Image 1 (tube, rainbow, N blue to C red):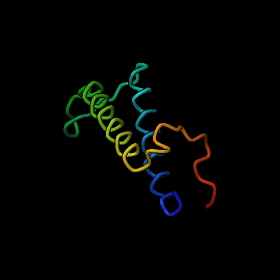
Image 2: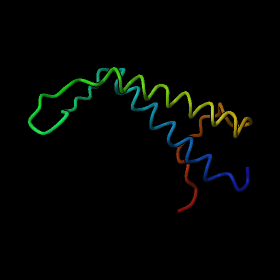
Image 3: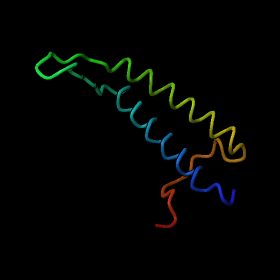
Image 4: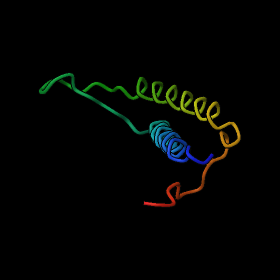
Length: 83
C-alpha cells in the first residue's frame, strides 16, 4: 500500500464521518433549513440521511475497489501516524 496511504486515509476518514453522521440522524438527530432568511425552517432529515447513506455506500465500494486487501478493515484510531 506504499504510496497510497494518504488516499486510503482520506477515503476511510470520510467514510467514518459520513457513517457517524448517519448514526446521529438515525438516533433522532434532525436537520432543518430555511430556503432564505425569514422563511420558516423545513425538516430535511430524511432526505439528508438517504443522501449520506448513499455516499457511505459509494465510499465503501470505492475503498473495496482500490484496496481490496484492506476494504473491510476498520482502522482503529488514530489513522494518522505522522503530522
